[in-house]
Image 1 (tube, rainbow, N blue to C red):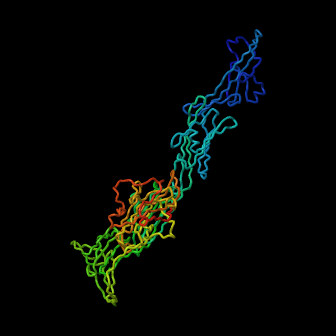
Image 2 (cartoon, rainbow, N blue to C red):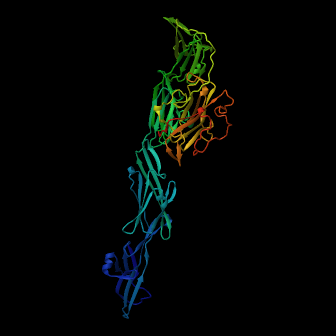
Length: 635
């Protein structure tokens, strides 16, 4: 309530005895009648010495004004009442009319704007309402954990900032921010729970002075929204195959393979691959982090995914598989070879300390996992037993023990490690061989003739080049940067003077070998040196399948795909090659210079938009061959 006290006698305006004959109250210079005063709650009264006008704070004849001293929000109320008084002097009977207009402003009144947190955690959006403020307050900016944004910048970033006008002329402001925004801080107080924090400072000003003040707000919400990663694994005869589907943390976890954390330097050994939603590992059963057990042999790999901050176990996988192991081989020349494997039950075993019954017979080769022995059946303490029509040779791989004098002997008790090895040979065996001879009339000679040669290109399943994909296996699915092992072979020929050269090889997006876009893999018989993942040529040696190594060329490239503006055009490629057959015995055959004899450091790649043209050679010596489709896996 505002109380305005005006003296009843205003000196020296009035000096003698007076009588107040009229009193009127008004606002802004306009007189009010009694009904208008009653409707507004105004009163006009007198005391012995004063005329008193009372006006409620907030009456409609005045107005509120915002202020921000010391950056804190305050308001004042302003009103301009009028008092009109008519006096009559008793001595003279003269009338005096007195009118006063008196602007009044209340002292500063602190205001604490209310903060209404309307956040519903399940919607994953922070929602807050600030108010109320007078009409002369404006929201200028908001300070987030990442910095200060204007209202326009906040809305452009995907946050919803709105101003709400109320019926009484005041206003409020609202803000909505998604939980996933970069300005929201996150913390995991429990394994499956995420706490979201949104610290805010609202920057406001009072118009027209543009006096600034601020309001600090901290919002918090919790959700049980953690999705844990999922692991799966399979085995074949040689390797573990492990895949991990990421959860809500993405790849933000530690992977513990066996006893060790998976580090970058281990990635190549374990064929590590990650595409943003999954990761995969391919480990041989003899991997350093695998645990070999004695049954037949069984190998186990343990994989843990740990939260980086708290070491909580997010997922675990224990994959155990049986693998074939040829521990002993018996050779026709009377030689035995044996492999001893370090297993989980003898973790402290050092394979290099193993020996045969004759302690001078130690491994020909050993590492921290295996020991390899090769010896004749009549050495190293091997025993011989004859039964029926077989001769059995037997020995034993064991540990050595040292007595107090330092001499090596065998423990009288069962040793910590013992592996019996044996070979069986047939004692008596009869084989019949028949032959006949016919005198030649003349010495044989080769005749010049014509014929057809065949060249094929195949994709191997692994670097051993023993198993190849068949026609019905295409399209073949591979991971990004997974090696592709190709073999180009001259078929049905045993002529050692012929050599196959992989002259040009390239990849295309479509089956048509002349289509665009394309990318060079081999150029003029050499790798494309402009490729960050250069083609690798693999040596070819004679074995049971390869009779003439010069008839085969092997190379590998890493799986890739064609992109444009960082977008994958199509998740498949086709590989094509020009193969040339040359005569190594003819110096005149210029095409037989060998596979990649150019000076090192020279670049040979052509632009991807240029079509490949066949070299002008005899068509009977050059073939074009292609592989089936190879599809990029999204796993």
